[in-house]
Image (cartoon, rainbow, N blue to C red):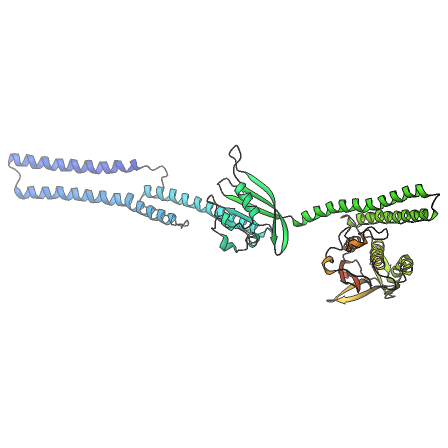
Length: 483
């Protein structure tokens, strides 16, 4: 095929045919005229020559029409049919190449090349859209996109759940009509263009109630280059809770440290005034100072322990631990406290129990659990420690439980007792003998470092049981052969 063919290439042969027909017609007319003038042309000869002339002209016109049809009309019809199919979305349609028409081949090739390029670009765009949709659907954050008319053209499942509808219901809807949260509507209505006319992005923190729980979202609303709107919501509830917890920690730590310091200061000032005049009052001040000093010392120690077990880089140092040794050390450390309150302090465990764990973390867990039970159990009550191995769901687990017959914990407080400085009974505040509020927080983090789960069960007026379960699969309590 000659890719440099031009329509002018058809003019030369067509003009040659026309000129030849004209010359032939003129020659015949000349012959007829001369013959008539000389009287040499007979009527029947005149008819024959006229018929021959007409026949030649008709044959020339037929040849010219046939050539035009093959060179132009048929190729143009085929190209037009292919264009109609392409316009209808059939981008795999191709125009056939006419063998007898260089012009038709050129047009068909150019059209086919254009269709192939467009089809390739469309497939690429469809592939990219599929990748984008898959990516958006796989993200846990709600994502929503609108067209310039602010109608939803893309929405993932998390966004549909946030709006309490299905993606099908949201598609094509006006964005302003499906935004249920007033805070989101405010952000959307505040979105515009900056002073330079560039698309604007707004980042705001909004609060919403979902599944009867308060959630904090970081909303990002941006105007796209085409005039649409992109909305992304990120659930930062845990982060906000962590920030609030740190804020509460600083406030509570300041309060907890300020109370004993103020008491010590008052007791010291009083002691200075009555040291020689009132021995009984002096002894009372000394007792107050001593009690608060012990509480400050315990609080500082608990803060150090909490800081250590909360460290993300904490790696337990596993070694062989005997159950009898662990229980014996607990009795030695906590026995005097139980005797002072006239409590029945019982420790029970398998004498042959030997396992691998971090002895320091275990002692920390034991100390805080038993100390809490003794502290909140009235005189004459009972504190029981049990260390045993159980089979659960086909897996061997070691279970440590501490049970007391103390005052118990109200159900509404059970979810928060593992928070730092959280005190269940506000009436205990102000007492020099009360806890630091860090014991169960230390237990939670120390147990987590060993791969354990902590559960608490309590009934007001009857007592509390705290259970730590160490799965063998996590190697926190991998059994070893006893010698």
